[in-house]
Image 1 (tube, rainbow, N blue to C red):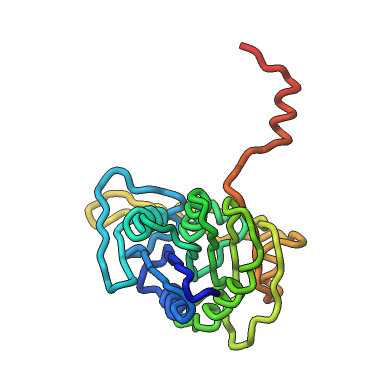
Image 2 (image 1 turned 135 degrees about the horizontal axis):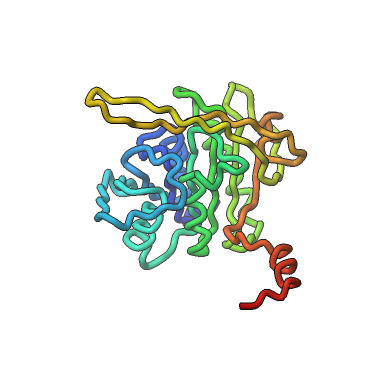
Length: 253
């Protein structure tokens, strides 16, 4: 990693989270690192922008800022305010407290920040730790991310491709394996819990636990086998096979 490299880091757990703090400390040894992150948890905010109210941005120190917006807001504010004369060389979102694998990437605020980076044509990655519990050490994971950045310097991916990286939880053993994977498949048995508040008004909690399908070569399989999963992703949702199939119908009005 070049010492002249400028990196923007963000997340959806908040600027105070262990994952982003460990990442900031580790990457700052080798690069000029700016943190722009939410001032509160923004999990499952997906790729949302705040359009119905003004945003606030608080300067914590020379290199760290907190906002009251989503992860996507954080990237937008950083690019237009801190990097308006020169884009960052890379955007890293994480290290998230919990996995972002399979279909869950569509909900993830962590992944959304990397998506926004790819839209802006800035090399980007989202990094998450599976099975995270509060107090889990994040320093080793941060060192792994720094090493992966260095290893990937010579891989010239198109900026429209971003990397979704999931690490197994740090159980004290070194990370040894890296697997290139595709998104896995999971099914949620979604649960909506109906309660009543002290004033008699109803409220709801959306919950549920995922059930993963065993798919060969998937991110879930890799992490389950204690390997680091790296999944290259693109935003383009176009289904080219369906496009051909629909053209065969010669649709008319």
